[in-house]
Length: 204
Image (cartoon, rainbow, N blue to C red; front, side):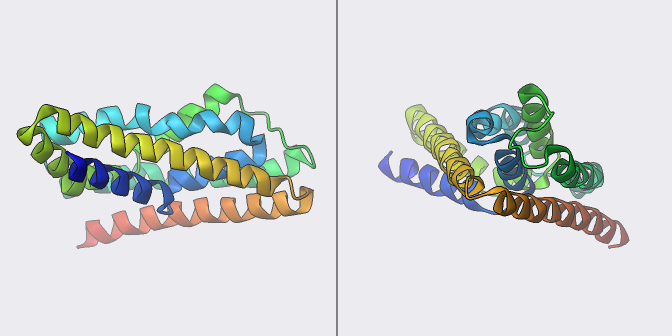
């Protein structure tokens, strides 16, 4: 069990620090809303991953190309919309750290981003799924340990990143606005990449 627990921690940390649209959105909301309002967003993976894990482990076993194309075609424009909203917040928020979006709206947008991101599906079909099933065959408790280690590390590391970006946002209005602009550009970049990747798969 210690080996599976260590692997779960390693994979959870890698998932938290790996640049991706969900992470960028969480950090952009941290800069806009402040870390206190953004901190609950660290738990979005616990909500969004439930259907992903169930779908991959019990239905698909492996994600077909058609599914990744559909996810990218839906997720790309959504990310471009969120990038536009982040850019608009620079004008709407002015020098205030608060934004008009409600905590619930922000939370469910983060859940939607993760659901439309092909990476969690691929991660669970290629890495985490086999790891969990192998651990479960050895001992059910080992499978539970893998899940606890993975999501515990993922949530705690994401919370630490939110706190760190919250401190950066306190360096001044200019710094915060610059970082929000970078976040908006990153979201737009991920959106364009998703669309381009989907079109490339269709042509292939």
